[in-house]
Figure (cartoon, rainbow, N blue to C red):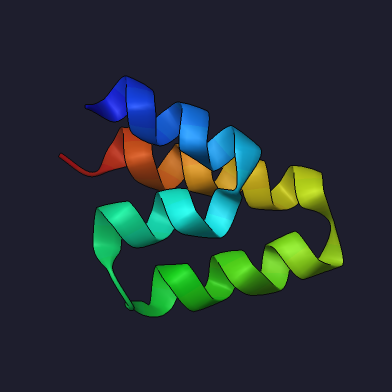
Length: 53
């Protein structure tokens, strides 16, 4: 399931984070990072998905 979340995170970073943590602070931070630059949003999303089990 993490592989699917990582693929979703690459295509649409906030959705990948939302699937992992819901409407927590990490989701809102990822929206901000994605708006500031797509690449930082991807890095943050993959980090959140990989670090939380």
